[in-house]
Length: 95
Image 1 (cartoon, rainbow, N blue to C red):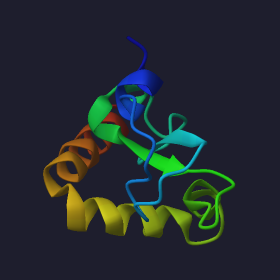
Image 2: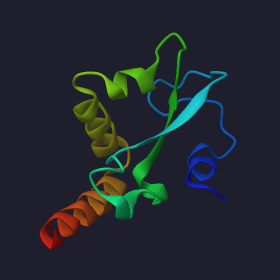
Image 3: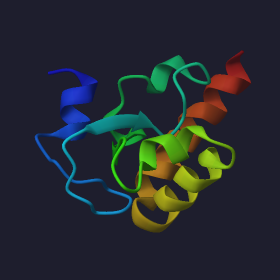
Image 4: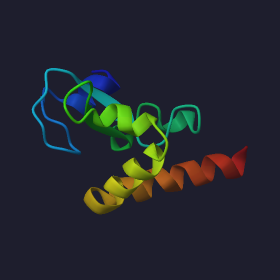
């Protein structure tokens, strides 16, 4: 199963706004370019609506988007955020 399929898991609702949308995209909390080790880690993914009335995926890629997603992870999935942050920290240490 692909990372995208695992993150979406057949759901049609956005984890941020809760809207049930036709287009749901996965999004990386820590971008693939920042830490390739987290590219396929399910803990690093979130389901976001795209092009709907809230367009949470668009918000995640706009100014302040990184903080928008980080704040959500801290509030809703702190263990996943912590695990991903620790992997990123280790990756940067080894660079």
